Length: 153
Image 1 (tube, rainbow, N blue to C red):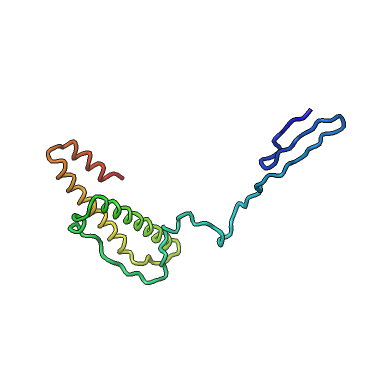
Image 2 (cartoon, rainbow, N blue to C red):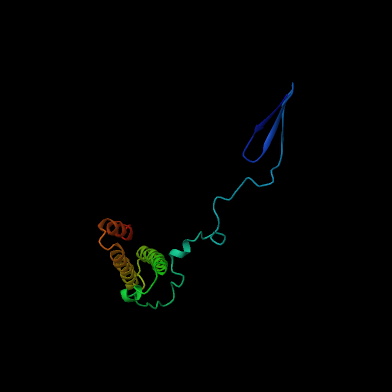
C-alpha cells in the first residue's frame, strides 16, 4: 500500500508501508527551499524608497523659486496634474530629509524649500478653484462637488 504525503514544503515523500518498517523516498525539487531572511546592504534592493531621500544630500543645494499663479494659469489640466505629483514627491522627500536631520541632530538643508513647495501646491489649488468657478457658473451643486475634489485630502 502506498501513500503520498507532503513531508515538507520543499520535498514530497513517498511512504511505503511494509511489514518490517516504513521507508521514505524523497524527491529533490528544482528550486531550493532555504531562502535568506536578511540580505547584506550590498545586495539589498531599494524598492523605490530612494525616491524619499535626496540623492545629492552632500552637495550644496541651489534652491529655485516657487511657481507663480500667473504661470500656472497658462498650464493645461494635464500639466497641472503632473506638476502636482512632482510637488507631492518633492514634499515627501523633504519631509524624509527633515526627519533624518532631526534624528541625526543636525540642521535641515535649505528648509525654505518646504515653504516653496507648499506655496506652489496652494497656488495650483487656487488656479483649479478659479477654473471650477468659471466652469460651474451658477450651478452651486457642481461648484461644491468640484471644490470638494480640488480640496480632497
